[in-house]
Length: 267
Image 1 (cartoon, rainbow, N blue to C red):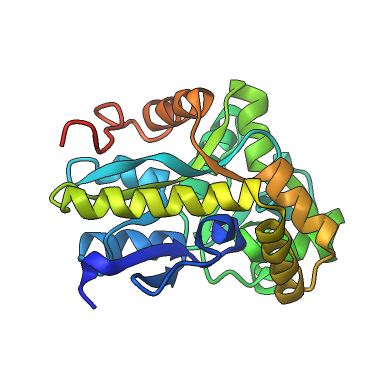
Image 2 (cartoon, rainbow, N blue to C red):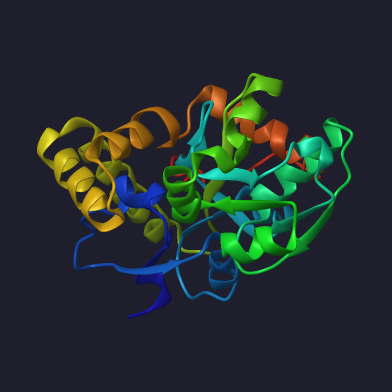
């Protein structure tokens, strides 16, 4: 299948409401967040949810897909600083290589607190990370697992801290495509993904099926999965989310220009 028929998705449960039942006309490429940026730029896929910080870096080559993102409006639950000492006394923090947004946000939060620990990139294994460093940044399903198994190790929820300081949602990931992508294909992909999310939100049977499958696969209580989708992570970009996205790009990423979206009405 051509790259025009491939949709990238993050290999975490935060994308399940959008990708729960993609039809046979599309293939899905699942990968960690930052890997998807490379796939998108190389034309391995038509669209992908990439780290917001990567969009800030490659703005001249990419456009955003309207309406859909990976966003929190307070506690995110799956982007966590972990450790066994206060953040003020951390001398070094292990960071994973698969999310530039979370790393950029952590740097910004540390600077605001007047902290300057060394950030050391390594594989996302919590035991190894905390064996070598005072703190560890984990994202996605791995962060959810550690929060369930070792809740006492949570030092900071980065989504909560961002919203506490700014009063704005935190857009961790944006759905993007290359500027030169065919607009008809982008519109079709957009409509499919938005419809998938609306089915998840509005159809109890679809929602229950997604929640049950995620709970079974992750070995979570269904109530925990419900809380994650209801209270922590969302996939629709509203006006507050746009303001949060714009502020992050300017304040944290030092992006040279505002975000730009594909305009379906102009084509």
